[in-house]
Length: 242
Ligand SMILES: NC(=O)c1ccc[n+]([C@@H]2O[C@H](COP(=O)([O-])OP(=O)(O)OC[C@H]3O[C@@H](n4cnc5c(N)ncnc54)[C@H](OP(=O)(O)O)[C@@H]3O)[C@@H](O)[C@H]2O)c1
Image (cartoon, rainbow, N blue to C red; front, side):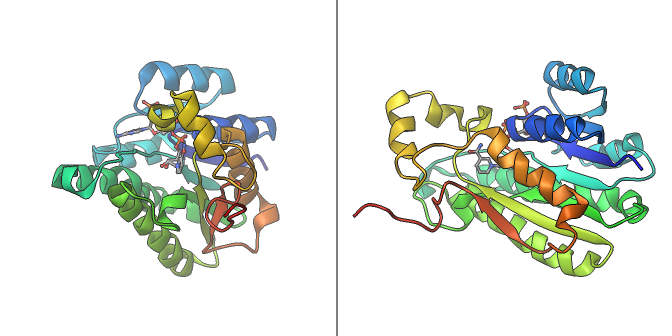
């Protein structure tokens, strides 16, 4: 039977690369995003259905679940923010926004999709997004690191609670070439310097990350749950100089 998968952030860099890979494998897609033009373009390209809305609006989740259909085999939450500032310059609103978009949105997306995920013929699979910044301490990352640490906790807790019917895993990328990292990537010298901090000497591409997402969503990952898996060129664990 054809798999049906819902992707929040389906018009983003990693979300759209995942959607294209799944489409090429014959998966039916429901995409969620908040930019009408970008979402419409990718939905048309892949023959996908879609829901438009902001994850800060709680009513989005029930609407997206309803429009995605009664049965879902997978859910991807690839929505994110980045707000790199020193602790002194971060406001309460900055912290709450990063938490809301990265962590709370993921929990509400899963909660609304739960009835449909439970109806999957096999095991359903949920893929969330953490970050290298939740595994290694980086200056100016307090807000995003805190929010992504919450995603890791959510992954563990829900993997236990929803087993054996639903698998829940997270991917922790290092800097990947998408709109999210644009502020860091727009300067060629900075990009090169960051790339050289990775054992594999380059930044990530959306396709590097999408390959793992598609695997985790497939029946081939049937015995993997409760994991946060890095796709990071070695950044979180390896030091090759000095
Ligand atoms: N790229 C990296 O270096 C990196 C590193 C670590 C973790 N991650 C994580 O990977 C995931 C995917 O990010 P990405 O790199 O693919 O970034 P991206 O291209 O910016 O995609 C993120 C998507 O989320 C959407 N979005 C942002 N705020 C939203 C909101 N309030 N409501 C609805 N949609 C919203 C964006 O909309 P627009 O289309 O309007 O931009 C975009 O489609 C995120 O969870 C991110 O935190 C990325």
